[in-house]
Length: 290
Image (cartoon, rainbow, N blue to C red):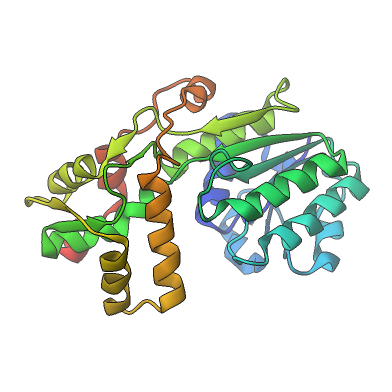
């Protein structure tokens, strides 16, 4: 079995490669792809084949899939164009005869009102229509998404959000990467849709308490209205569209879009997911922000 990991120069893709190797994958049977292969030199030095693959350039995809039977399609970051770009990979996977396609989707992608969901829903539908044997792993929020908030709280003592009393069942990127590695390596997952999350759904008061431990000062949670949140984000330098998008994500959290703590991820990786404080402590560079 030869496994290709897309976006292997990114945070999640790189960790998936590391998890595959840690779980016994032969480096000669792992292929790491990126738009810029110079970012994969360290992996190449360890015996991993590296290839160019750009979701937006179909001519790079077919060659990358040669002699590959398993593919991890890490969802792209080109918001608004992702569904079409993902279809480029799906079409190439079908043409190449890929026997397992694993896609990193969003929580409850086909039913949620979460602002990021529509492109994931469209991708899941495209995978189903293609007939390529697949596994969908719907990743909840990364704990690392809150590193900027915690870092800022080192100086302000405040974490502000319009998420209200919403909860987030986050896990670390390393947790999600290990889950993807398990699904890529093991038989028996085809046709499944997995809701991957942390074991605990935390509140923003919990986030502030965790931040207090990490940065070494009292941090409190300040709930904002949506309008206050947008105004604060714009004052911090975000454009109106981005500020509105972030506030819409807060609304989704307030409406419990990320609150489901599903045990599937911890069951598959054989250990509890990383606790919030531990995950933040590993990711936040306190000395740089204190």
